[in-house]
Image (cartoon, rainbow, N blue to C red; front, side):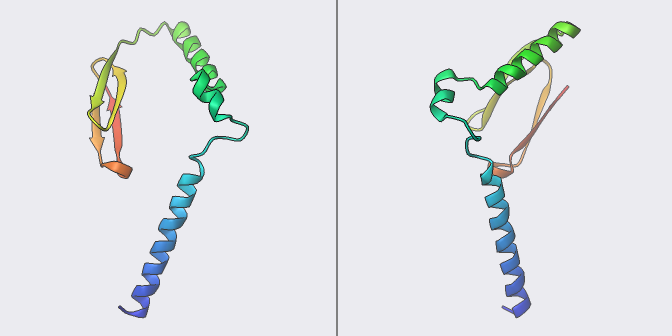
Amino acid sequence: MSRTGKFLLLIAAITVLSASTLALAGCGPSKGTNNSEIEQSGKTTENVKNNEEDTKIVEKYKINLQLESFSLPGVFSMDKPKGWKVYKAGEYNTFAFLTRD
């Protein structure tokens, strides 16, 4: 392998390691969060706050959204609006999906 090829391989390896480190940095619990509190309550204050805002929006616009279950066995499951389609792309760490009417 030429010297340039080795250099490019080294740069690629450093880039992948840096990206992995940055991606994993956000995976841990946030500051001041006690894991046992989350496990016991099943809700965080942020989730409760978001649910209250969602409820206000639904009440304001009188949204009647009918949901149906959708799942890709062994991959993920979700409740989607009735009549919407789900498009899947990629697998494992490149998995993505689009849901639209």
